Length: 108
Length: 110
Image 1 (cartoon, chains in turn brown, red):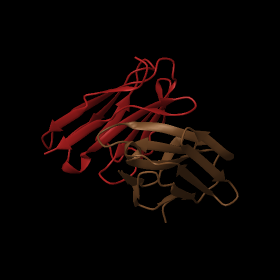
Image 2 (spheres, rainbow over the protein chains, first blue to last red):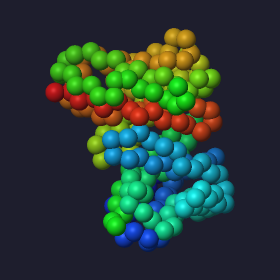
Image 3 (cartoon, rainbow over the protein chains, first blue to last red):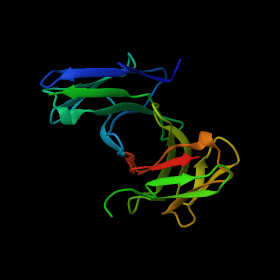
Image 4 (cartoon, chains in turn red, green):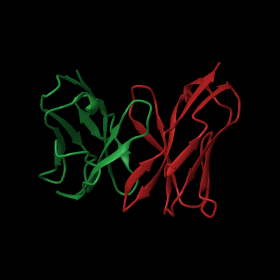
């Protein structure tokens, strides 16, 4: 079992739909990262959170430390949201262990 | 520059050749990380520098890979005797505390 599991692996949505991407991890952590990667592009950090909820525009990230689970939500999805969304947790200091990513495609 | 930069953006090399990949971190960031991302997978940790020293190199796959950061700023990842399995996107990030990623170098070994 991977240390960081994401679901779904692939997700196709219609423009305007509410989207949820899930991340589960198997060890205790100090914080969890949500990252976005566009095709051919680098990785952009969306959120780093250690408890509760954070919101930035149409993106919301939540984390439940006891259940070792985090979700990334996108409200009113748009085709420009199409990307790979990756969750990552720090291990042995600050090096990140990444999930395999969720490939999101939003159709207009 | 404002962000992490990596050069080259793309590198095609023949099996057995030596390559160097460069990372310029955000000015003032003391920590620097190298990750490797194979197609369809999440990135995997290679090595982490705190200042000039490699604080953790446990992710380097074998002794063909090594990295330096002689002045605590720019870092170079060096791969000797490249193999086709080394083909991947090599990502660099700097921090603290949140990690800021560069655009990556896509390495293709033919």
